[in-house]
Length: 347
Image (cartoon, rainbow, N blue to C red; front, top):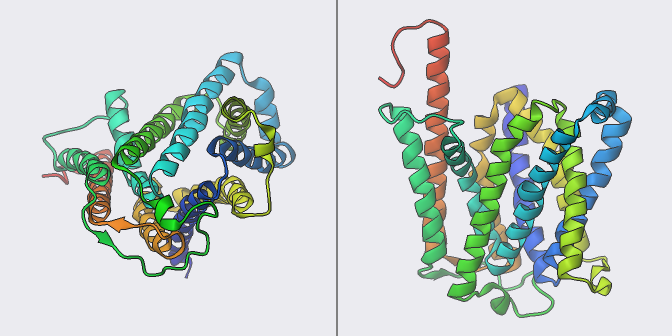
């Protein structure tokens, strides 16, 4: 049973992410302002993380006092572009598109991160090797899948249910989930931009972590900074404080879920899986969140699934696995080389 625990935890992680896509979309459909939602979400995460960092980690308090101004500025910029801007762009893109597209674009994250690492010369691509070719093909497949999802719709698949438990209170379901080509393209672009910023944050934070080895402190400070930044953005776009009032509805549930469950519980679960099995193992389960989101979106949100979304999702999943396979192959080659074994696995 112990050998199956990482698999079970990885499935739970992806299920949590699927819930994030669904609840976020439902809350936005229900009238919750996106910028206010991002602020409350980050504030909830900060409220959870700060006591943990202060009360249970003495090393965090010590390292916090030793942080230099330069490192703090780096954290501020990372939080601004990698969290605040990324989440707000992603949220607006989610309004203009669908939760299934949002889930699908997460499958491009490993490939996009790898591409940015190559452009920043933090990763090498050996085109003569099988692993290098697999990574290049994977990146191309992910980009092709994203373009297919954005530009081609094709025939629609009917929803399994016509009774939606968390549909919008302001509009009919068909009106909420049917988007014009223009808004769909704008939303797709915003989702892509948000993903690129998130990937850039993933690539660059490794440099900052060298000066702040505590991952808990690093995460807590960034959550706090993004809360302040998100408040400024939200108050600029929605100065009417009456709109900031929260009710006991799907919006409050989404805020609590994204802030506490996604940021708090998922952070720990992901760290545990990576420690046990490595990051590649966890990434292999990423497409599961897309499958769960597609099914639940049809059942509970009444979203229309098109042939283009199915084909685009399939290309992105195939591209993801191609990149991960190439990366794992290179790691195996490096291990063989370190052990002094002659020959190459690619040969």
